Each structure stands twice: as C-alpha cells, then as structure tokens.
Length: 76
Image 1 (cartoon, rainbow, N blue to C red):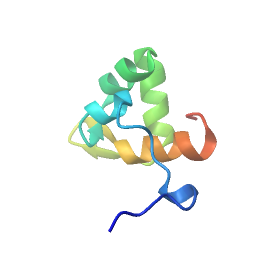
Image 2: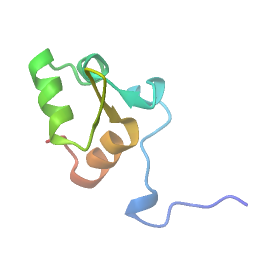
Image 3: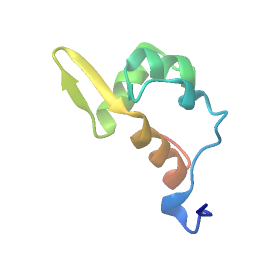
C-alpha cells in the first residue's frame, strides 16, 4: 500500500539530492562537499546539530540534516 505524504513530518528531499548519495552518518568532509562550505563551517554546522562522537570523529545523521533543511529551510 503506497502512502502519500500528508504532513510536514513525512516530506522528504528528492531522490536526486546530493545527500542521498552519502552514507547515513555524515562527517565534516561530507558536509563540505555537499554544501560547498569550508572546514571550519562544516564543524560549526555539525556541532549545532545533534551529533555523535566516534572516537575522535564527529558524525551527524543524514536524516537530521534533511529534517533541519525541510523544517527551517536552512542549516544553523
């Protein structure tokens, strides 16, 4: 049974979004490449969103980034 998006929580970015080609957990380099920002800004973006630290690596979930873009239309 196919469901149609009914509200803001079910909206999604198109399947051709550059984020769709990335792993589930994005690092600073992924943020840099997708959004065309520098290294410092990519770390600022990750730190402004809910993120995890794996050893010394910072990671943010791709869905968190997508949700932030859909809800606010921009990243922090």
